[in-house]
Length: 497
Image 1 (cartoon, rainbow, N blue to C red):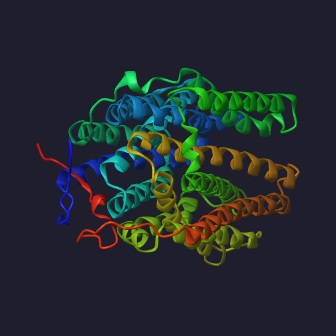
Image 2: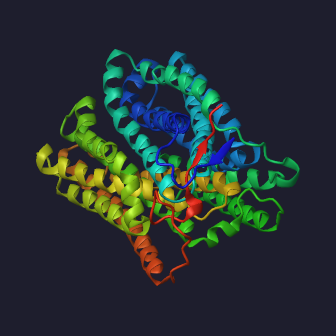
């Protein structure tokens, strides 16, 4: 049960803080899982005797489950209840983590990774929509989302360091370590997450055809771009798969435009802010996924750094995001997402562009650190802003859909740009392993990454320009706590039992 706080409330209740902590823990685990497995891949391949092509599926299996089912996860949260979906999915995440740490077969490990991706596809939109329906739109939601998204960035950064430490003791610990954390979060979630009335199934309905065609299109798209590097971008297999994706996507759009209760109400894209936020999300995560791949190869293969050294090299970016957590809500309240998003994306693009100076003897202070500082500033500004922009102005009953859309944009953008980045590296280097050949592959890949970020910058600048032209709307009498917020945007505080 939730109740509106009065306009004079100045603090969140302990129960409300507990709710946010539980949701942040799930986000932290999702991000931690993504970064930890990357450093452990060589050890996994050696221990389980996996080829390079098979080993990449330890990563791709997670992305396939996550990116392909996010829309379904978001809609399930709206129809079945956000709390119920979150609890079940978090339990599955813990079980899949345990399975991944115990198996001795590569296929089972990939299956466990796929299952973890599926569970994250349900926890991510459910958790985000719980926040956006528990904290009213405005300063309270901005503050909660800035903390929530910062936990994700911090988990990713900490995962890089933890993976280096845990892999030295055995790669299985990278899978087993999240298990007790997930179980503790699950136990707290059962007690703390707000209980909401179960949605009326009869009035909502289920769009089975839309779920099949939409999820099928996303799954096949992620699979195709992941496999395109090995099969060839112009191969019959790749082109045929993309053609099937186009057919499924077209069928999905037709179904969604005609069904009474669509999986994705197409009218949500009439909200220009939501549409632009999703496009920006694709460029933010896509460009960073490609950049991190280039940096990992450059530092470890060409410069000969260890996995742990590389992890600490990337840490400043995450540290800046984490340190900014307590202030980002207030900053967003003051300046707004339409101002902060262009600055954040510009900082990301500048960080990527600076790395174009790489050579055979680049140093940390001269090359890596400046880029990491810019990336930290960029993510601190852009990541919470894009999440807020993607869910603002959306009705409560569609918050799961909005959350699923932006998370889908993150994952699909990441998969597509990473696949293209890999192809550019291979084409530029010609398969050579000399330092010069490697640099010939890395530089055009960095140009691609920078270009993707600049596309995102253009999208955010268009949004900022449109916001300046929009006539000011009448503002309700503000409350005393947030002078700029309408009275009906006070935070909802969970009533104590």
